[in-house]
Length: 130
Image (cartoon, rainbow, N blue to C red):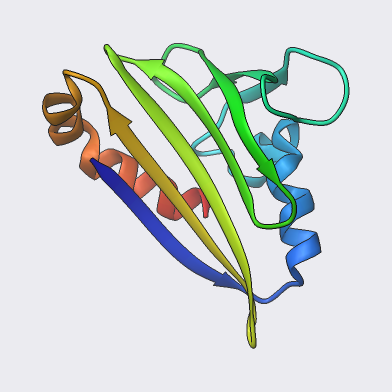
């Protein structure tokens, strides 16, 4: 199951990419949806890097980076309620600035059930975060 939101941001792709990868600043950018982010390794994010994410009303989750393809794609995954959730940030240049798509893919045996339960709340959250 995929849930996604697209937004056009009137900023150059390099600026949006820099903010996308600066995950520890996300709580300041989106304080209503992210409480804290902590990189668990030193250095820039790369495949295999892990980040502890705390969101309001939820337990902390460990997200593992799978893709860093500058300046167009960043993806990471976490185990949630017996599923794997993969968040993918897809950036592209447009005449108006940068197209920013945030997609959440929910996979696993419980994905249909979990997806139905969280679809509405995830849709709201990614619209706020995007």
